[in-house]
Image (cartoon, rainbow, N blue to C red; front, side, top):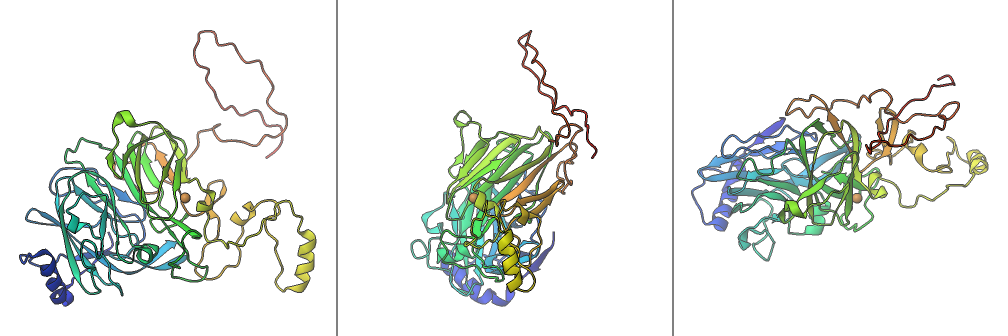
Length: 460
Ligand SMILES: [Cu+2]
């Protein structure tokens, strides 16, 4: 793990003054160190060193916040601060986040734990943290002005509460919320069941759905955008910058996500059906579940679904709103499908130097392959390559890679799936397959379908 440690001794005078004002406690030896993460890539899960056993989560393009035990308290230190986040190779954004990244680190603990969370504000304005979904004493709910004074720049506040239930939660500011969430301030908070056997899975992935409006060539999000975002992200990353979800064949897998954008996201996974096992409110009862292949996640909601990874392959997982699998595009792109632009091209090429390339006469797939001149610090609209060519996706898209024989905690990218012979869609060359009469089912057994390659007549 590439964690650089910082200490806050330099500011501890001011910080501790605020600490004792808020909590009334004076027994702290010191504020715990606040680890900071420099890498935008998925870090290995943090296994518990004490207390009940659990299968830790992995955060796509993220990490879990280390903690320390102090008596019966599990202590964490979160620092709200400006960060530089790589959104995909080739583009960096100047955001606000926590402990070096946006989103902040995932907080992980166990039902029944007493958590003490130090929050230091290094932003230029005040902030708070709200523990979205957690059952906390009202004064720990983090709503600036309503349940506590805002945390001013330079101050450290302390939140203390006992985790009353297991489940899937988030944290985010409840102070100048529109600005601070538009700037990327949010994080995941997972509470594991006290009973290690309950809701146990082999792989448990988490990510937040978030969105930014960053003009091509610039670095800072426009914070008053309400709907027309141009970067639809999972954990402040866009495809092809989003980690793949690597899974061993036979694993029980959980994928958890929370939505802190301003629209809903129907999250769709190929190759499987699955069941929603956890929502904002807690675990769903088994008799309340039904199979899905797409689950809509409304604003402010969290959803977790589970499946048994029995089918090998590279399975797409993405938001089903097609604009959300696009990267920065101008909102003034005109539709030219069916318009023959050859004549226009000739005329304009005479007028401008460097040539003129009309786009989109036959759809926009050509943009997936093309290297177009673009301003600094932006990403192609559709990008990312698979083993067969351009994937023509951006934004909220990744790949669930199910492979035979992966080690238990191996999350390394195994490369592209090697399809068994005769199981890939193929181009028909020459004659179409002969029409044969379907055999009548005799014994009432279900018919088996098999992809069979016909003999090829052409050369290839
Ligand atoms: Cu979406």
